[in-house]
Image (cartoon, rainbow, N blue to C red; front, side, top):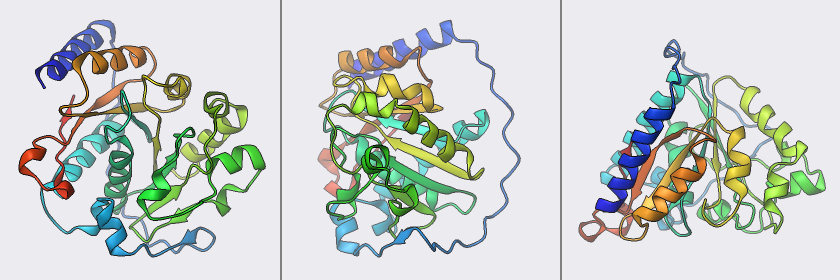
Length: 275
């Protein structure tokens, strides 16, 4: 725990010493969006037990688990609006540290607000698992668009949660780095970023220390969010991960996943955003 905090402090001091970026003024308050009727996007009703089994916050009304994600949503939203950003990538140093669940619940939480729509893109093409969180099986997705010319509009899924839409990853790919930086993928990112001014796009990305995907793809996002797990991620791993992306994209903060889990149920994992 202390080593993680030390790594964060070192990164923050290093970033402030080498960066003199100015931030734009916060955008004027967004007006409420009208209700959305999804006509082409596939709309599903995901059973509540499925959402609860996978700890999707939309299945719960209250609790520390919900409050933590609402705090995270507020902090992320403020940083995005202060800088005029609308895309964020979610990653972690290693495997199994909770980045996919964090990406899902951050997107769901953002979509519960009435001032924006949210698209979650499963960009972990070596191991796409976002669809499993919603109990979906054998879903076509991003890989099928990039390699088989499947229309994006045929791949989008609205799981019956607020203004939230999901683009699954599709089948696993071994050459994910090359696919993620292909002209077709970059054109898609530009389309997703600029088609709707009130949309936030969240990319679930692979772990930083195990593939080149994040380093290759992160320049096409506005910022990154780093997920670490208490008791699993070491300070050295976090420092290495932050160092890799230091000159690539700003890191909004580090989510400390499963903090204090000894006193919490599995469905009540806490997170803290350290900036």
